[in-house]
Image 1 (tube, helix red, strand yellow):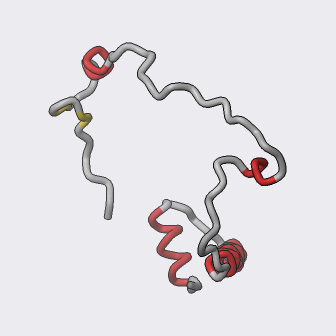
Image 2: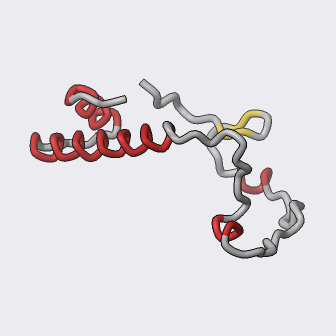
Length: 99
């Protein structure tokens, strides 16, 4: 995948960035360089390789210090949503911002 200068202009517009032509060209080169690295990584055959829980575990036998996955804080949803202008079924309602 590679981007064009019109892609950069559209992304900059969506991000509300005012890019100068020099900045746009530099960003185009940097982003295309990033996509080249991603394509190289995707080309590596990883069939049969187990994912690592931690990158250092390949070098030494480490024990991860994991905590139990349980809620430890009280639920303050109703108190937090009292000041919200619009709430429905526990969710904040906001204006649509996607073009």
